[in-house]
Structure formats: C-alpha cells, structure tokens
Length: 165
Image (cartoon, rainbow, N blue to C red; front, side, top):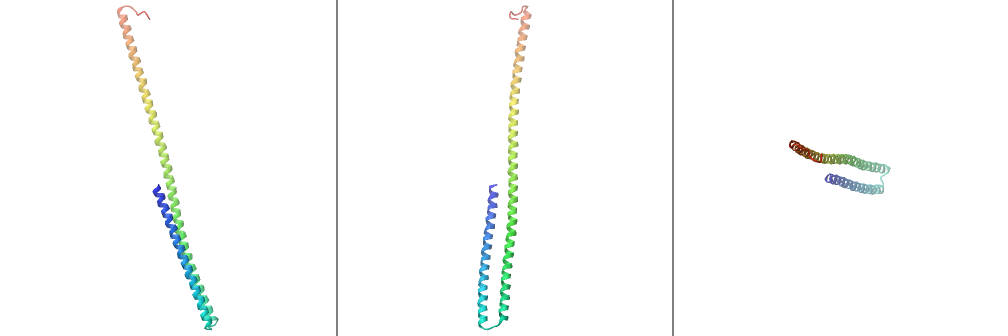
C-alpha cells in the first residue's frame, strides 16, 4: 500500500516536473517570439529608413501576425496535450486510490471475520471443556451411586439394614 502510494506520488512528481519543463519551453518560445518581434520591428525601421512604402509595411505586419499566430497555436496545442495527459493520469491515480481503499475495506472485513471465528472457536472450546466436566461429574455420581447400591445390597445380603436408613 505504501509502495503503491509512493509510486503514485512519484508519478505525480514526474507529471509536475514535465509541466514545469513545458512551462519553461513555453517561456523560451515566448522569449523567442519577443526576439522575433524585436527583429521584425528592427526590420520595419530599416525598411522605413530605406523609404519602402506602405506595401512593405503591410507585408511585414502580415508576416509578424502569421508568426505570432503560429507560435500561439503551437503553445495552445502543447498545453492542451499536457492538460489532457495530466487529466488522464489524475483519473488513473484516483482509480488506483479507490481500488486501494476497497482492498483496505476488504482486509478489515476479513480481519473482523477472523476475529469472530476465533471467538466462536474459543466459545466451542469452553463449551467442550464444560461438557467434559459435566460428563465427568455425572460419571462420578454414577460411580458413587453404584458403590452405594452395592453396599446396600451387601448389607441387605447380611440380613440387617444400616441404622441411618
């Protein structure tokens, strides 16, 4: 159970590490995007300095928008994939935790049944011992009664009765 929980914790830590790694990659992509934006801005300045007209400015803006949307789309796809993976693993961990709880409940029930069986065996042993004691007492009474009868018969055979009768 502890090993399973440790494995689950390790898996969660691994997921968290991957998420941090993905966030670092996203930050790197954002930095690259900013660098591209700076380059694009520099290019815009250079183009303006060269006296290229609005046509060149529009083309640059279109390229810039295309690059930004491409980077944003890639980031969104990667984040969605990570979130989907994380949700799947969280569901698996939850399922494993429910299974572990069910196993613990079954073990508790088995322990209760075992304790009840032990109490029943103890009670049977006590009843057996009491039964033996009763049987032994009955045998002793029967033996005393038989000895008394034999004495009475012996006394009657002699022709006189004992004085205490």
